[in-house]
Length: 557
Image (cartoon, rainbow, N blue to C red; front, top):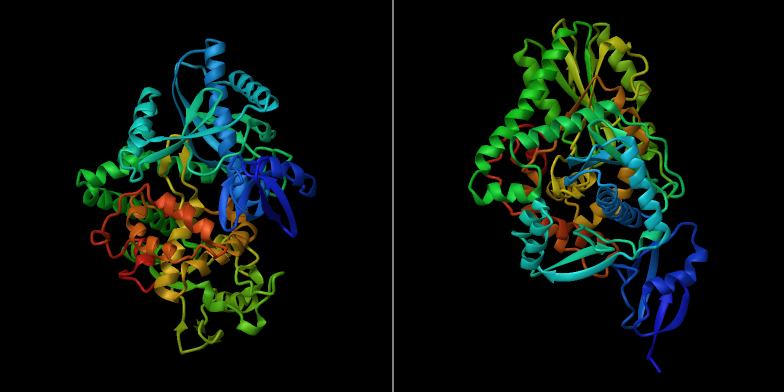
């Protein structure tokens, strides 16, 4: 008779045979959850459902409506899609496939392309989608096996997945986990679902030069939303990817090659020059518009808004303008007047945290040529202060205003639309781990913020990770809905930055203890950073946006 072990699920304590899978236990509790159980938290360690119970433990299930579970759904859907693409190409003899590339997020899905002789059209995609549904109905298992790194390199060389072969040359650990579905093998950065039966909702849509796999959101995992691409954002992402291809650095393995070959100094200079060229072009466009008096800069957390506003101001000066940077944070309401969220915490992300009426009163007065005293906000005491910083706008003067609500016309409701030039800025990571594993933009910004918070606010990584959910929620509500209203978009991500940030972020993440709630996320980010070879920050220019986070900037940031 097999030995029994105690498993605590929530408040219930049950006994199971040693070797029982968490998937089997999840099946018993699925009735208590609205969405499919996707992963399991054993203590503070995230695990896949195919893992087995080996000792007494306390567990918590995560569904596809949780962030980690939703990511597992997206990865697993990607594996199912790739398997189906190769199957359809072979079954229908539609042609050869040299490479399927997953590029970046578009709307609620992922933008992909196919290289080879296959004719990519909606008819082909419909066959792929039909194949995906058939494999889902059959509940084809997603298996995982561990192999030696050198064997993984040989395997992906055989499959002509050159980006993975390149990536694993720099693998520090001796083993690699490889996932398979009915003979199709691939590597994924992160946890997966147990089988294809969990992947019920998806849609393949022909778009631009490739296609999009549209997926459900965490808010509704049983419906695929209509495809509504944001064209301006898509164009910026494509342009950034073209820069990466021009520099021959599209993946982490390619970046590591540059480091090993001693070419990072040149790469840093060229990438910075490309950004400066873009900023100069934006300044030139602003100067062509004689009626613009307010440059409104908005973007999500850790996009580098402050450094960008200073660099844009330098370029405006070079064009004969007289720019004056203003941070919207200076118009925060006094702390005791700040709204609170449903958890009772101050909600600094909402528009109501800003004294909108005072801001409009001051900006309107400036537009009419009046002299105005601009406030500053004392974050230590949580109050707005006036220190004699007076301002008056002349013919060449222009205000460069940065803050998360800059694109929302409710913020500047009293100002004429023609007086505003709107800029959306975000760190839209153009680098991928490999051809099938993209780097989420949010991960790059989270690492930036963690490093900056530790340097400027004395916050540890645990605190930053703990508040990231509320920050992200604020972005979804207050920033992203307005991004397409921008006159121009700017990508502040730099190809080389994660190799620099690695040295600063790793010690912070290692400080998080196994008993901490944030431990699982810290381990995920450490595993992610392990893909990168680290480089010194010495060659990073002092006006770089990266300096806003690691220190040493020539600007007051």
